[in-house]
Image 1 (cartoon, helix red, strand yellow):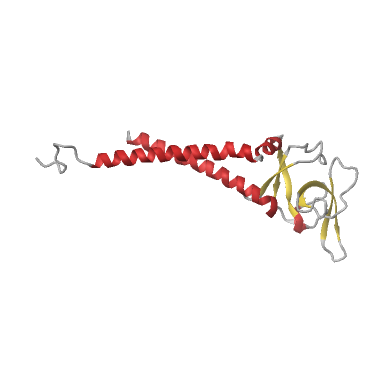
Image 2: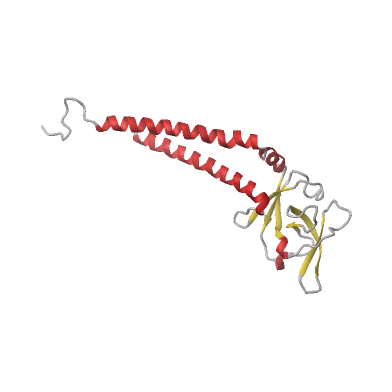
Length: 196
């Protein structure tokens, strides 16, 4: 009976930790919209929200971007970066490098272009603006993520189950404490020291 309680408690704690991690990720994503792209072990997951990279990466695709040194990047690579374009400044962008050049001061910069765009981007990309090199992608997960970013959907998917689990655990703990207190009291007519 004690083993069942331990297993039940372990599963409850594990579920609680999973939901807590989910809330942490959600909060991190919300914060990252104004403070940069979060990464996990050097990898970032970015949602493609425009058709500039069609057919390579259609709208709704999630690209997996790896942090790399500037020297590891070559023409033809697809990179994610923060554009200097005032219209999209501060928003992650993913385009292909069409050439690598140097400015008057000898600093390297990249000329990028969306696969579906007719012209190269007007603003160069410097290594300081680089998020990383695209290493792969995941289908149309971005469309699902867009739906999940709705605060009401997130509330019902994360907060409500977490509150239910916490309430359930509080109820279980109250039962254990109540039964534990009763179990500590010696029954009437018994000798608690087992003395005969």
